Length: 400
Image (cartoon, rainbow, N blue to C red; front, side, top):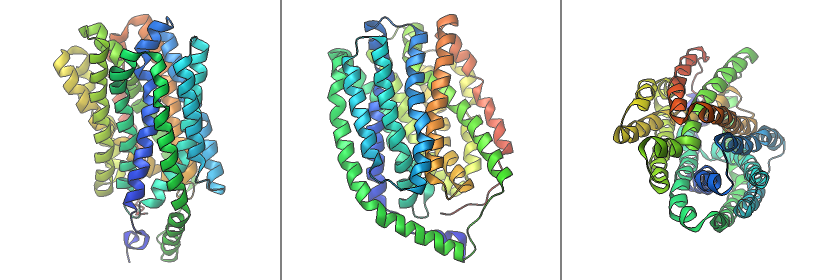
């Protein structure tokens, strides 16, 4: 009997779709922060360093608690903890809509970050449990929701926030209430689905399919994955925080036009994570990691030197390829530590936030000192970090 046969259980597609929808709502609210930067920059008279610090505050608040929450829920599952996280996000959005000072903006984005840090670990665990034997598909659906939510932020900024101003951010508190209702339903299903997952793992262990990796293998794998995540997130952050400014400065676009370009870029990410998750089930996680991190290098090198049309084409291609990495990185890490799903989910979503925040602060300083265009010329070399994938330990497919 093969490992895949032993460990495969039913895929709870409805639960995965609802999880993806809650991830969409969560990340939509997060994405309103960078989407509103042009408005906040003008209303609060901010410079690029302060913009970078806002991102760093949000990202670090969203990263520090995630491994802690993940570790706690590994020992004491808390199926309704994402609902609590949404309460923090709701309060942060309302506070940001009323913020009149730089300090208040920082407090507001920190609250939204804390909400996200509580949401991700338990939601990631539920996606793992509901996947059956189709982990790539499950993480692809979960993450495509997040990417789609991130992509919608610039659209709502162009259609709502720009014409109606900063107070309109409070209107999006409705999305937090919707997410809380959906997460309450998911929490009610977790006990039964987790029991099914545990039974599947027990059958795998009885058949000898379960594997434990040496500490050195785990350490090397996690270090390499962290380095790859930093390079990937630094490049992505150059777009999330500064792409609109780049388009406005270099090509003279208006704020709504630049926001729509950012939306197209982020839609490509949504497609990329789903395709990467599905392909990872078929051709292996390591191949996807290689392709997605190193593959965009020729395109990133060309990007700073082309006109507006080719800027749009190249950014779509770059993000389509690069976004395909995260599902495979996350599942690879879970295969390294299969009994610490909450910790891995919290750690890697936390890294996604924290490393992106550090990168945003560094890029903000570079943009202020040397200009936004120089930032993209420097970031063009970041995909070279994909060469580090050579050092990833070779793992057999986990199938669970």
